[in-house]
Length: 361
Figure (cartoon, rainbow, N blue to C red):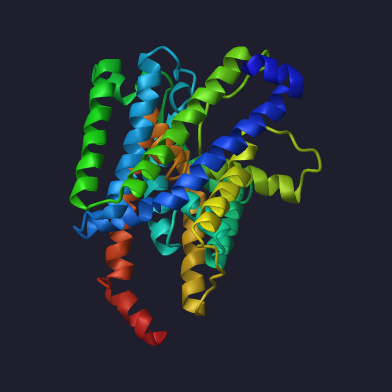
């Protein structure tokens, strides 16, 4: 089917449309479910275990189980995914994950959440998202790239089985399915405990299944295409930097899956917000808040490029194929978010309390 469509409209356009539609699916259900890693991490660190944690667990488990079911059925082969096949960085995963976790607490949202909120009229999220994209581009090819490369090369790991966390412990597909089922049960358990509304529950699961759809689409396209097609799914750091580069520098646009993700998520979130009558303009209330958002956005942009992905790209897409670096990134994000929340938002740091009093807050 994809072959006949590609013959009709071209492989590049088909790839872009796929990214647009799957991004739209993610954006719509991420907005409806209030999916947010930052909110989930804060709930967990404060011992609250509420609905935001349940939503994140269901999204994560849905992506994990769905991806591994496709692999078990023989409908998907992820061995050539960059998260597994290419050389990775343990140092980049650990340091980048921590930086991203700190940044998403300061910016009050991860990269995907900022994009979703931007489509709803949140100008704070829009500005932070733009700064995130600039920082990501600077870390990828610009002024910050030497620092990123130096940190990346501190501890490298070869591609192949050494990047598959289950292969390292002697497990295979059955163990991956069993582990995914545990996460899914945990998600339903927390959903029941927090009395999560059915609408939020199903929206969270469908948000995770958008990641599965991305894997399946790019895999099927790679099997039917004569030209090399990267096997990938949803991520936001690389595509954000790519969209920024296209807007600022490139008159010749090469359409691909990644280039469709950002506008797709934006449109999907806007439709969901309009459907729920939730589109409204919001801005900054003071200069202190703006500085916080901008610092967080820079930390996230650099951290995502160093880690090899954002809260979705590494934390869900990479984790769904059991890439060891992705799971390390995820651990770093949760740790960085918890520490930053305790020091900044809960005022454990004397320096932070003094700064807040100096600002009159």
